[in-house]
Length: 219
Image (tube, rainbow, N blue to C red; front, side, top):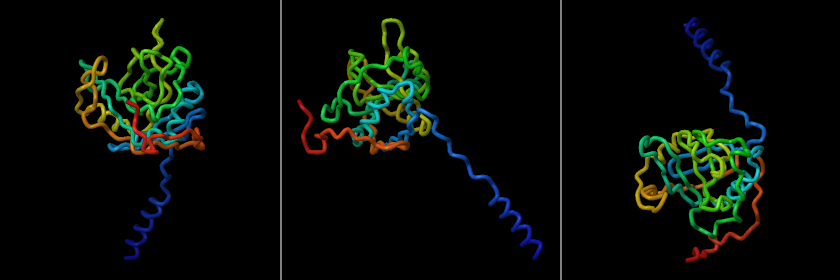
């Protein structure tokens, strides 16, 4: 009996002495943000050192709560490799949530590329028109990098947790849309319940939030 208790005590000591798993340390110049969605959480590390303007813009949307209640609404799958492509989310066309247009920080200047897990700002025909819409890469998408006269899009960070959530969103049924988005609109968009900083102190813009005042979108 005593021997059994002694052995059990040694086992407990061994378990107690096991080192606790280490948490990944933030990389200098990176700011982590968590997007809590209706399909799970996605954690991002934003590169404020190499893409400062783009990161500041995204953080303004986070700190103001402008992304809360928005959605991931687009899944752009490759026709030849449907497990690759990108997903897109954010404020959509809701002008009530939009801040001033963002000047493009092209990959040719930042050195950041559209690799698997990268996050990038979306924009229209005018490359300096980005606001609160963004894309997350599944697989490398070098066609979105700057090349020659094509300025491409602004990559500004990467996924460090929840890539499985991103992949599941990419696989969702889609349809509708038009032009480059034809067939790519997620039939049941994924809600961004909350967007929150994990590093640093929130710095809200202090601007009016019309969507919280019950004002409807223009048009």
